[in-house]
Image: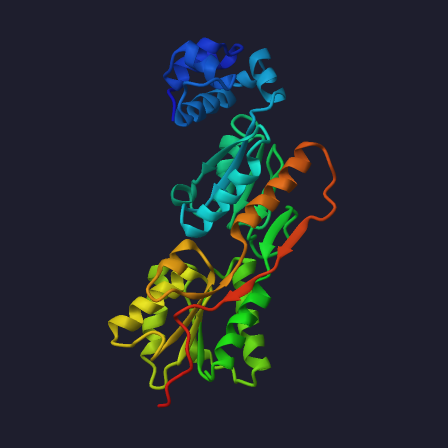
Length: 342
């Protein structure tokens, strides 16, 4: 990432000139980067701070003062900028309004793969951000130099404060809605198995079937991982069955919209031939034709609650609760109807 210095620079105390040479920037740029001044790109700041750590320059008076000050920035780490994370970011931005803190959205998932949160926090913590909100993490435990709150957390017993929606009850609401319409073969396209939300929605689906007196059929379950392409493949397999479902519940809206695309391509009419329910209520759900019936989770409030927890931690307060679960509700629109008799 930066050039290699001679052995003399590595054996004596590093200077700001050494950092500048290693990072390939001017001394003035190093000064701006370590002191958090404007006019330096985020990429350059990361390169300079990498050089600072490698050369041990963080022991200097300049870097010590840098660690002790506040940046005035809350980082939101997301796997990707997609409809769900975009709504979370809106909630975070609204909650930060008037607090004096700025919002930094950051993603390193595509570059670093699983465990991207650790690498991203290493780049940002204590130098670019004062606290972090991690959305749909890929790991159970993440440590950092700053307060961290997770939204839609990973499975397992992590020790981070978390905010999530009641996915279990939301899935039950979806199945209950379809059963009330008269559907008896209700399929399910599951989400990411490493996320607590996906596990809860799968459990809620089965509980909803049991409450309606309907048997569980493994052939009516596919895995979409919250990804559209994967959900399309699962939908193709499910709708190709000799006895396909008359309705499908998807673990997120993007998967539900993919199911509808597959159904239409196969000559099926939604909702006449196939009812579809999603989960999230992203803006695309209401704009779809027909508008998507879905389980609404309060995505902006998820972001706002995470901000409230982070600000409390920054103030040195003890959180009254470290796990917050928000209610969901079904929003019936145009993609669900009673099944046609076969």
